[in-house]
Amino acid sequence: MNNASDLEYRKPMQWGELDPYRRGRTHVGMWAWLLQRVSAVFIVVLLVLHLCFTYKPYLQFLLLLAVALHASLGLRVILLDFNLAKISSARRLVPWTLILGVAAVVIAWFAIY
Amino acid sequence: MESQSTRTVRIFRYDPEKGGEGAFQTYKLDIPDPNTTTILDVLLRIQKEQDSTLAFRFACRVNMCGSCGMVINGREGLACKTNVCDLPAGQDITLRPLNHFPVVKDLVVDMGPFFAKYEDALPFFEPLEKRTEPYIIKPDDPNRVDIGMATDCIACGCCVSSCTMVDNHDSYCGPAALNRAFTLLADTRDALFEARLTRALDSCYNCRTEFNCTEVCPKSISGTRAIKYIQRLALKNLKSVRPLPPHPAETAAAHAPEKAAAAPETPPPAHPCACGGVDASRRSFLKSATGIVGAGVVISLGAVLGTAAVGPTLNDLPSQWVDAGKDKDFPVGKIVSVTLRYSRTQAFHKENKQFPVLVRRDSEKDFICFSSICTHLGCAVTWDELSNRFRCACHGGAFDRDGKVIAGPPPSPLPRLPWKLENGILKVEVV
Image (tube, rainbow over all chains, first blue to last red; front, top):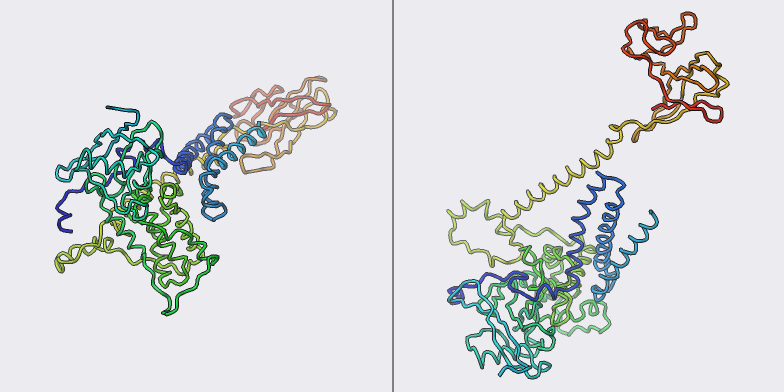
């Protein structure tokens, strides 16, 4: 132990530091998580805009899309949290819930307009 | 010399005697058969043939010991389990030590923090009862099925390296330790259920369900599944969960002066990275940051919602057409007083209004509607046939047939209201 402390360790490497292939080989669950966080930020911004400028179809569509993406990925996490979907289906759930979310957006959009 | 099978190998080098940040060093190596060459073979050959100073760990070579965990082309894995052909075509072989652990030399990391967290999850079995006979557990026992292959963990550290949350939360034990806790929590023979659950819960809510640990595990264990299992277990056993005693680091700040005076030889905390090692300044920062962000959200949302709720009352009131009566009721050449009764909706408020108007009919199609509210102080104006004028009883104001002021204090003529005839009914526009 004393010998080891004489050596100077390099500080721990961070996720993605000096890691040229990391981003290209990131797994889908990571992207799902990131998309959900980004959509959450978009929801807050778009919701404020939506309340300030009501009945702007472009804004409404973006808000609907952000909410749908956030909700569908949230449903995936709920399914996994409560063991309603098999943990081995985690990867498959990402595209499926997103497809359902976007389908809901399309249906809602054409039902309104 | 350079043939088709020559591959470029980039290896992260860090020399503790020189220090610094470390950097990649490039080697060229002939790999005739990528299908049967593991990354560990590559490393051994480079060490033997090209650079004897290269440092890396390995022991069993057969995916059993977990010594050779490293980041191979952006993904954690065991060097002995990953073949060169497993890497995407066209990428150089890029080897780098695991994340989140201090680097000792080249690809060798200090696994101290890993095992400190591992120990904190109480990774040992404590029997509930003394037995001399072995337990008989059938393969279809629900506990046995739940635990599954999760006991196969070889503590290689790949999951902790791939997890993006371990580094953001000092108190997070990481997938390996929580997986170990899960195997024992799901085991009904174990006596330390409450203590272990309390410790696991202290960190298991830091999981963000990214599945990075599941994707990289060389033993195909799902750390996420273990963490989710513990979270569900906590829901079922809420009463067994008790708050942990404060960590020494938390009380240290309060007692720092007296401690320094009384007991300077106090042993330091076991390991700086151990679970629960949240220092007081970080906690207070988090508290204040949460407060500021929360206040910002409340203020912005409150402003927006408040404006949405109150806004309509600030706008101009919407006007509406109200029936004044059949046109037969208004003789030509006369002035008739009518009271309009209607309800007015303003935001969430609804009110029944009575609004008196004076209707002058000049011919079959010509009407003039005056508001019968005096422009002086709002008293009711009436038509006086004898003096041929509108009179206000309050302060003696008087208006002529066209509503112009002819006497008294009123500052402006009687306002005229828009009107229309629809199916023989006179309608007046009011607000």
